Image (tube, rainbow over all chains, first blue to last red; front, side):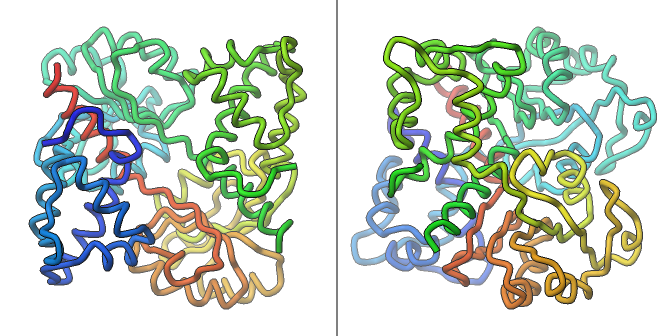
Length: 213
Length: 213
């Protein structure tokens, strides 16, 4: 059980632990020390112990962690055994990449429908799901229990549709646009992916290195 | 000029400042106080002042920041006026999304070539750039000054190609795979985008909210 007030920095490290443990598990490794895990993850043993202690700790001093056990526990903390119903809005290149790229079911979600306004794309299918007109979002969400929307459209398109989504009861968003949902809807759970921010950070790091080097 | 030892957390916030300032600038707003900027960015005035002080500070107490001036300065710190030559490897759905989605030139980069191993995609074109066979990467990189590669293939494919890329002299990577480049090449500059980590974080946040609510 997570203790109250676990910081978002710790939370954001959990998927990474889960990913590395899944890898170790698939390689048949049963036990790992925090020291070895730290080397693997380019972290420190004390950071790992500190992070896991936020959730009650899982290792026995001197015995290391059970890989499968710790993986299962972190999966439970993340809630990955759940299947939050999710719709994707935007079946352009980015939507297509996301629909085909990710193992939603292993990540706590089930992609149930895809919507798009471009008529050329309506009726095509992605991941075996037919792309529907975005006029049908409201009816679909009312008839199905949807809590999450993936938004792959540009900012302006999100701005136009967000009130409708919120009014339908969708409170959780995986947002690839620069539209700031949290500012308008304080109770929404929003995970933003700003690809351009990531690229600018890379640019800074190259530039800085060139100045030093 | 950045002071030495600016933390990566501060660096990661710079693109976000740049993004908000670009927006204000395009709306014709000339001056902004750290307090107003903080409200807009869901941050605090003291955080903003502290971050900007890492680079020498730019405001005059009580006068606020010049929007265009601060935007230009942050752009310079990020090195966005540069044009790091960049190649994209992988022209599948994710590569396609990235090639078509981003304004590389505004983000410090120039996408000069796209490579792919799938023969069906070789010869097609993205963003006006012809997709070439990945056999040609070495020759291309030797003839052109390329410092950065975008990797949109799965982990196993990156594992196979990374030595070749490094041997060609590419030292900077925008990596969408789970392959851990930094672990093998300590001097590489790597910016990872782990979409599945982001989705797991969203899952955690929904789950936690449901438990509390």
